[in-house]
Image (cartoon, rainbow, N blue to C red):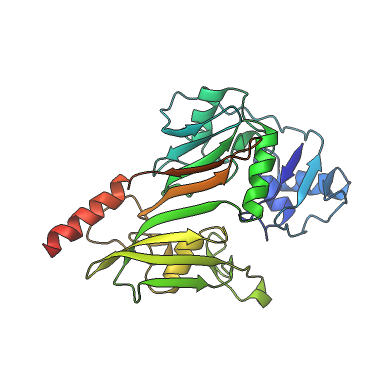
Length: 306
């Protein structure tokens, strides 16, 4: 099996990373496979504590207990684009992108297996069949899915080269200062809360992270914005806006608290994608309408203003 590491997983120890991919195999067993030279990174043997980098290639033969069956489920999919090599779906808020060790049902991968069967890339293992990039559970919007390994490798390289344009809509807490902003702050793992990311100096492991922000509409207690990702770090928008003292509305993990309008966590949507189609090189542009959460918050504040 070959796995390519993306921006979301860099700075993770290889033993922890593989434990996440294969939760039915103990970390000590995975460490044993690494130590005995059964797992290679960029064609060489590393230690279990090796920290992964974006673009690393992990190779290994079949691991003991590796075969974990993820069941297909007939869950409706909002398919925005499809061809012979890939598709783009509009993931709803509240849905996990792929199964975890504790949740193996009702994820996007379960739905994709029902629709596509074996016609999904397997580069990143059974738990992430077809998944090229991810969205947080409570973030809705556009996700690219690879139907085969050729398309997966092509799209992953496009992401690595920052050749794909990804734009988001969000409601931020408070009245954001200024109409446009370039937030250029390095992001790394939170030093005290490992389930979170944070603005971390480069010398301490932070990676370059750039978000472009444009104000679309202002309210006294909130700001409607468009955000363009120049890089694609884990939780990048949520971390950057929180650091600027304007966290994403209802994002309780990053300090927003609950606003006047109740929603299922952060009001954040991936609404625009521009990418190169595998094989043909055709440029594809996709855009969707604001989701239910954004419309709900906008309606509340627009009515108060009127």
